[in-house]
Image (cartoon, rainbow, N blue to C red):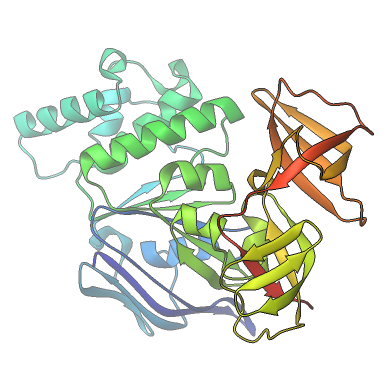
Length: 346
C-alpha cells in the first residue's frame, strides 16, 4: 500500500474540518477526493503533503509514518510532487529548465536525459525553449505536471489542477493527464469539485462531505451503487421516486415493479425512495406508458428530457437528439433498471 490515511482529524479551534477520515491507495493507482467547496478535501491534501499538522490520526507513505500527532515530516523529505491550481511555473525559466528545476544530485547528462524524457512524455519537445507566457493554459499545465513527475516522486498531489481552463480543454486535458500518469506509473491523488474530471482521471474516488468520506469506490459503483442519499444526489443526475416494498426483492413504484436488493431495515409495506437515473428511462414510441415533456436540455447527440408521470412525479430521460419532442407533448417510455437503489423514506 503506497498511501494510508488512518482516522485523520484536523481541528481549527473547536471546529473539525476533517473528522475521522480514512482511505488507502495502492502503488500506481490514481485516487480522487471529490466534494463541494468547504468539505475539507484541500485540507486533507495539505496534511498529506506535510504543509499542515494533523490533530489526530496517522498518514503513511510507502509504509513510513510521515504524520501523526506531535510529529510531522517536512514536505521536502516526503518525496511528494505537487501540481497547483495556478501552475506555479518560473517565468524566467524556459520549459526545459522548469522541468529540470527539481532534479538535484544528478550528473548533467542524467539530468538532460530525464528532462528529454519528460518533454516527450507530455508532448512538448518542440516547446523546450519556450517561456511560460508563450504557452497556452493546457501546455503550462503539462509543464507543471512534467516538473512534478521529473524527480520520480513516491506520490503526486494535484490540487484543482484544471480549474483555470475552459470546459472543452479541461475535458481533453483530463484524459491526457491520466494517460501521462499511467505511462509514468505514478501514484497520484487529485482534489476537485468537478465529477467529470474525477471520472476521467481517477481509478478510485472518495466522496467528501462535512469532513468525512461518504463512499470510497470506483466511478462505476459511485454512480450505480451510491452508499447514501448524499452520494446519490452528488454523483450524476437522477430523481428519487416514491415506492413501497412488496417483499425482500421487490419494490413497486408508479412505473411498475422493480426487482433487486433493498435496505435490510425495510420490510413489506415499508415506504422507500427509489433512485432513477436518466439512462433508466428509455424512450419507446410503442410503449403504452406515457409521460409529458416539461423541460428539455439539448446536449448535442442527446436531449435530456424532464418528464411528468401521470401520478404527478417526474423522471429524467436521456434520448438521442433526433427524437426532438415539444414541451407539453406526451411520449412513450419504458423502464430498464439494472441497478436498483432504494433508501428508506425520510
